[in-house]
Length: 457
Image 1 (tube, helix red, strand yellow):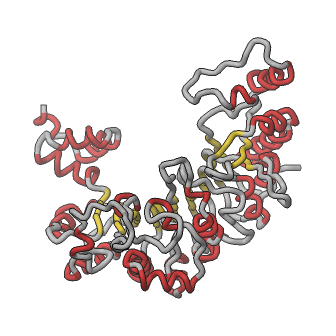
Image 2 (cartoon, rainbow, N blue to C red):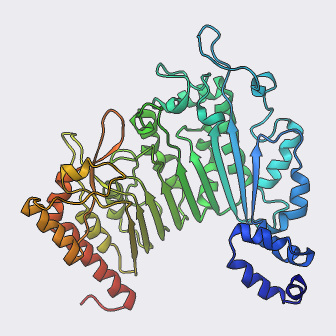
Image 3 (cartoon, rainbow, N blue to C red):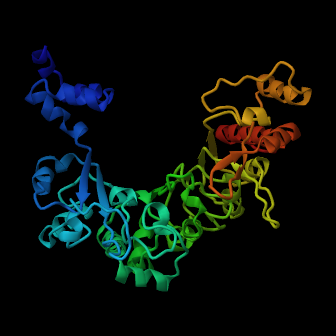
C-alpha cells in the first residue's frame, strides 16, 4: 500500500493532508520516510516553548530540525510568587518548589546562558516561515499557591493578584518587590524590542500593567501590528466569586484603550475574548470613537456588546467590514445614571456606519428565557412551556417560531458574585416591542444591498 503512496506527486499528498485531522496526519506520516518528509510541513506548524527554559532543554536541536516548517511560535511563560510570609500559617508544601530554592535567572530561562536562545526565537531566527507570535501567560499552578503574589488584604492566592486598581507608581514599586512582576515587565520589554511580528496573540492576558508599556518601543511595536488577539484572564475563587467582582480587574480593561489599543493604529483584525469567569460589563472595556482607524474585522466575546460598541461606532470607522459577536449580551444595571444600551441601538449604529459591505454574525449558546420559570429551570433540563402559559408570552413564542424573530438576550450582573443572570422580564419586553428585531432585519437588508452594490436611493 505505501509503495503506491510513494509515487503520488507531492502536490497531491499536500491536498490529501489538508483534509486530515492532526492525529490522522501523524498516523499517515508513519507510513514511510518519503511520506514523513512530505508531511513534515503540516505536522510542525506550531512550536511550543515552555519558559523559563529548563537546563536540560533541546530547543536548538528542535529548531534546527523543524524550524523551517513553523508558522506559529507559542511561548508559554510561567510566573512564580515570592515565598509566603513565615509569620502566617499558610499550608504550603515546600517540596518541589525549585523556584524558591533556585530561582530562574530570567523570565525566559532558568540559566542566563540560555536566554539568547529564546530571544532569537522572538525574532523568528531559525523560523523563516513563522509570522505569528503567541504569548501564553499564567502564574504557576494557576496562581493557586498560597504565597506572596500581591500585597492585598483579601487573599494570597488565586484571582486576588489583581484585586485593586494600580497607578503607575504602584506598578513600579511592585516590580521592585515581586520577582514575578519584574519578569512580566521583562517579558513585555523583550517582545516590544525584539519582535517584528505583525500578528500577536496573548492567551490568559493578565490584568496587571507593566512599566515597559510606557516606553516608545511599546507604542512602536503595537503600531506595527496588523492582527491582535487578546484572550483575557478569568477565574473564580472556588466559592462562586468571579474575577470581574474585583476593581483591579475591571479598571485594567477600562484602561486597555489607553495602554494598548490607542497605539494599535494599523491593526486590521482584532479579537477580544473574555473568559467565562471574567465577564466585561458596560463599565469595563472602553472603545472610544476614533481608535483603531484601520480596523476591518472585530471579534468580541462574553461582554456587554451594545455598551462596548456604541461609542466606537460613533467614530464611523471607515474600514470596518466584519463584526462577530459570541456570547454577548445587553446589560441592565441599577446605577442611577445608567441608560440601557439596547440591541436595537447597536444594529442601527452598525447600519449607519459607512457604505462598505459589512458582515455581522452573532452566536449565543442558548435561547434566552422569557419567563421566571424558564429562567430558573435546571440547565440540563429539556424545559418546555406549560400548556396554560400566559397568552402574552405564548404570543411571543409564536412570533419566534413563525416570524423567525430572535430573542435578544438582556442580563443583569450579580453584584456579589459577578455572574451573568438572564433578565426574563426585559427579554420578553424587548421582544414584544419589536424594535430589536426591526433594526436587525433592517441591518440584514442593508448588508445584502451593499454586498450587491445596489444604491440606497
